[in-house]
Length: 146
Length: 428
Image (cartoon, rainbow over all chains, first blue to last red; front, side, top):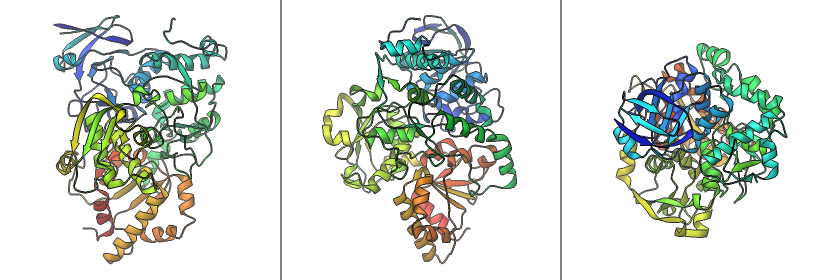
C-alpha cells in the first residue's frame, strides 16, 4: 500500500479500481464511440493509446498524466458525467490541463454528481499504480493505492 | 463559498445573482476553472468575435442542449457574435442510403434545433460554420495581443501563434461562457509568462518537412508545452504570406490534435518570435531534434485501422482543417495536371475538398471552380471528422492528408503528394 498527496480540483471521496494511461489521454478519441453508440461501459476508443484502447472506463479510477486533443474535451467529459459513462474519479500525476479542468468544473457546477478530480499526484504515482489496483480517494486529495 | 480570485464588484455581483441564476452559474464555472490554474483575476475579452467548437447536433449530446436551454431561458446570451466549427452534414458529400438514414434520423437529428439555439446565443450567420474562422473571407480575424474566448484546438493554436492573439485552450462550453460574461480567467497563454517556450525544436531535415507530420511529431513530444522552433524558416521563409499561413494552419492543427499544443513560436517568422527572439525561451528548456529519420519514424508508427490493410480507398478527404482559398487553387491545378498526365478525366477515388462557406463562395467566383468540378472532386463545407464519426464510415477505407482526421477516425494518413498520386491514377 502506498499513499500519494494530491490537490483536489473537485474534492470528494470514492473507491475504484485503477485504470492507467501513461501517455496523454485524448478525451474525444477515447469517449466518442461510447457516447454515441450506447456503450455503457465506455470502452476507450483511442487507437493511439496502447494502455487503454478497448478497455472499459466506467467506474474506474482513471490515472493519467494529462488530457490531450480536441477542445471538445471538457464538454465530452461533462456529457459522459451526465450520461453516467464517466470514470468514478480522474487522478492526474501532473497539473490538470485546461480541457480536463473544464470538464470537471462543468460537472461540479451544472451536473448532479460531480466527478472527484485530483491532480499534482506526481510521476511516482503514475509509475507505481497499475491496472486493477484498489484506489481510495480522501476529501483532502490523499490517494491510497493498494 | 469563498474564492481566492479577486473579483471586481461587477463580477462579484454577477456571481451573487444580480443577472440571474444562469449568469451566476456561468460566472461560478469560470471562477472555479480559473482557480484550478491559480488565476488571480478575470480579464476582459477583447476580440470582436468569439469562436465555438461545438457545431454538431448529435442526439447524444442532450446534456449540452439542456444546458444551452438553461442559458437562453436565463437570458445568459453571448456579449459578442461568434463563429462555430463546420457542420457535420452536406448532401453533396457521398453517402449511401443507410448512412443518410443514420446521419439524419439518428446521429444528427438535433442539428436543426441546435442551429436555432446557436442563433439565439449569438451566431454571426449561416455562413459562419468553419474551423478556419480566421480566414480573411470569413472575417473573424483577431488582432495581435487581443484576449480571446475561443475553442477549437486548430483555431486557438493558429490565433495564438500566427496572429499573436491570446487564448487558452478552452474547452467547448467554457469558450461560450467567456463570451457570455465578456471575461476569461487570467492564466496560461493569456499571460506573458505562459507564452514562454519550454522546448527548443531544432529542425534539421534535408527538405521541407510535411507540415502534418512535423506538427504531429512536435505535438507528441511536447504535449501541451510551448515549443520554439528553429530551422523551419529555411524551408518556409520569413514572411507570413498565404502559403506560409496555410502551412502553419496544417502544422498547428497536427500539434494540437496529436498533442495539446496551444502556442508555438517559429524563429524569424511568427510575430512574438520576430519581436522577442530567443528571450522567449526559458532557461531550462528541453531540446528535441527533428531530422528526416525522426519524421519517418513518427509516420511509420501511425496505426492503420482498416480491417483490410490493402483495401482500395472508397473516399478521400482533403481539408481538415478547412482549406484556404490559395490551397484550393493549388490543389485544383495539381489534380487537373495529374489527371492529364495519367490520361484520366475524373479522379479515381471519390474525393471531397472542404473549406469555409465564405471561402467556397469566393472560390466559386473564379474559373478554378469549373476546373475543379471537371475533375470530379466535390467541394464542401462539411466537417470530415464529424462525417467519419460513425460505425458505417469506420468500416470504410477512407484516405486523408490530415493528421487530425487520422487521429480521431479510422481514416488512413498519406502525405499530400501520395494522396494526389492515388486519386489521379487509374484505380487498382
